[in-house]
Image 1 (cartoon, helix red, strand yellow):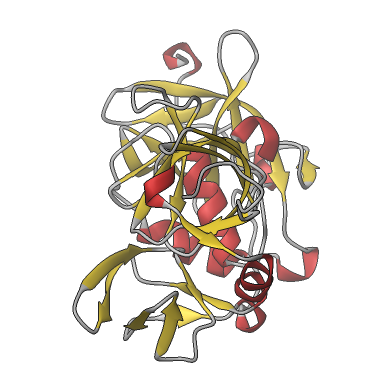
Image 2 (cartoon, helix red, strand yellow):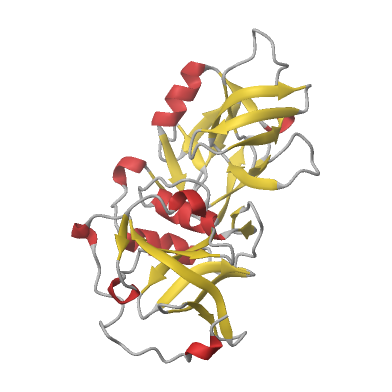
Length: 290
């Protein structure tokens, strides 16, 4: 990245597999999120030649990324790449260049992809994996669940957004984004989207369940599956049981997350069969709660 002068470009792109977005301009600062290959940022500020304060155009997250790990874009390039791209649908795939290979992960963006190739700066790449253009996405909970299941067993990583490490809100955001729904980065922001589902018994596959800590703050999210299950991230991306108390972890023999609210993002026209029969008795004893 260039220093913050009048020649400083307004936008940049992630040209690597993944780039950290930290809370402060130091490698020791907490990582709050990550940029995936092909994602765009607006440059807000620079600190020397090493750090750039970025506004992630995908979800409005703001943080600091290492300047050498970003590639400058002109406003014209940023506009072009933001409108013409495809999502990678492979959990992990290699981009092949003329003299190098580059790994990318699920949800990475292929700028101005023609179905086989694209260019980023002076580098040409060939992509032979699965990809989808946003305009071709069939929106609905089925796609959400399909993408979420691809991330099963990804280890927990605070701020992570890939199969190599992910947090709960990132799993929700990534699955919904590839299915055509843009959500904020954090669970406490995501909870403001969609319509409230009054009872967990009326929840449908693809609904989002949100959970609170002891202070009443939203700190966890997961996606409702059929048969009273939920996919979320707890030590790893996993599937557990859910009822009106929260998430019950069979391995630990206890509830690990207290349910706060369930929200429905998708259109009623896309609804799948009901998750639970209304008035079903829970099989988990209340005294096991937390």
